[in-house]
Image 1: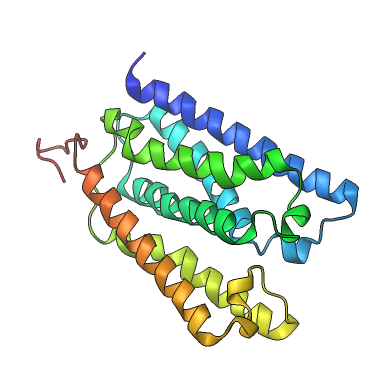
Image 2: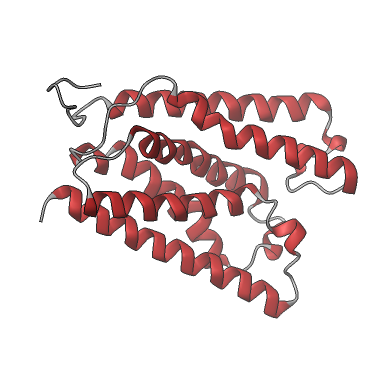
Length: 216
């Protein structure tokens, strides 16, 4: 079995674990009366988890069925890496141990979604996928793809917060102050750009050759 096919099975396995944990958490919260759908599905972690599950399935299938991934799929796969890392950092720095944690379900669920998922996606991109000869080198325009979801999420979250008065994270609340809001958003934006840029550079090592024998 080639490294690419093996990695394909790893991606599909990770997608199953994430999907199971995600569904289990929803059922767990629903049974306990703690599920508020119009709030639960606003959390950055929840959205990132759903995106990660879809992309892990798509990349896993691509690895098993095709010799080379498309640039668009690979760009999207990279885009979820800094998002997952952000969920882990934000959760562990601002939410762990707070009353909000009880709302998010059992401890093991949070460990999978906020620790295991970010660690796996980071290790997958920066270590495991170096052995995948079907991963194409990414253009710098992949940076824009990485910013699409964070920008949309912020627009929707602030619009919803303005209308309802509820924000998923303390540092986004108006009471925290514009300086705190801007500081967190700015720091996260810079982090996403830096990690994505590093991911683009890494993609150019052992990149899949194109038809003319060169590497993009």
